[in-house]
Length: 458
Image 1 (tube, one colour):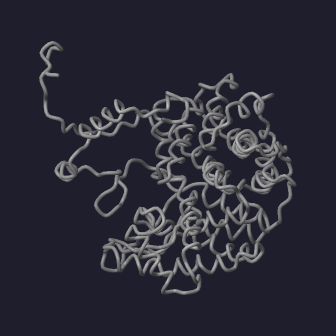
Image 2 (cartoon, helix red, strand yellow; image 1 turned 90 degrees about the horizontal axis):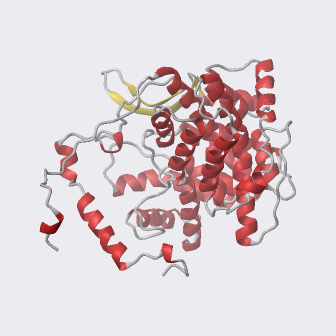
Image 3 (cartoon, one colour; image 1 turned 120 degrees about the vertical axis):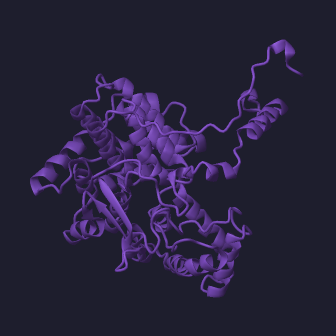
């Protein structure tokens, strides 16, 4: 029984029907090979099947050598043709926050001038205002234990407050997207505050954002009871938002945005669908697994500085003998990158500084050791077709934990960032397609006769 709620009970009848589903829905592995079906829209080498074109971002993980062969290279990520490393270097050297500039770049295809950036940032600030009583009537009512569900529900409810909700003209969709970009931090943090208050009895804090602050600063301000944060904390959070804002059209949630947008539906439905995709632990929830894995590791290791003991623990992870017994070292490897993930490279350069400020130097040393040892251990334990390196999730969860962000907000903060990329891709899909996205599936079920009910064997 599940408490006293009969609707949550898994009865023997349901278990029997579930077993029937599993038996009848299972498809033999060999059939995928027989019909040359690219499972997960990837070929045998893990490369994604080309399903569309985009100008918004580009990922490079291979290059052609002198002999004409494609070989792995250090990973590169471009936003509207601009190397993300150059973009980050620019606003860091100028001692500015970069997320708003990055959002402008993704949406409009070029870097803003000083006046354009000021105008755009001001517009985003004016949109940081929820409808009257929205917090009380929507966010405070039936708060969910999962912040991504809360976020999706809030987005879908905003449809009811928009008199032009179904207008998919580009000017109107841009207006809707800019408003969602502005509101996501508040919807996420307020949803968390309501959950902590009603489910855990904590004090309720609903702080208002300030128009002169950046997105990163406002997130820390409205989350913390004292509204205080250090300049380095805001800078590192802003950097994380920039690095998560976009990652090619092929990632699961962005592809979801394209698929749902192609049906002609409204912006709120398309964004809610993307949120549902990002919620999955194979996508947006990966950094939570990294943090949990390291917490388990720290409990079980007798000496965090012993490389042999750490390497042995990594082998146990791969052999399904430690942590969650999934056989994975979370945060290592990526569907596209092999030699390096540029986002991890950029974030790593700031993690050490934040760890020093937070007194987490010992934990940072452990992360660095695992990053160095894991590729070698994986190479010894597994047959792999490409190199393995740390991905952005390897460090982002550590960063969020050092910023005292609750794990419940890890994935919503990802969404706060990625809504910029989703918005750009939604508009791109509206501008360039007249067809609904509809991939082909091959039926492998044999033909069967219809049998009248009275003739069916019990």
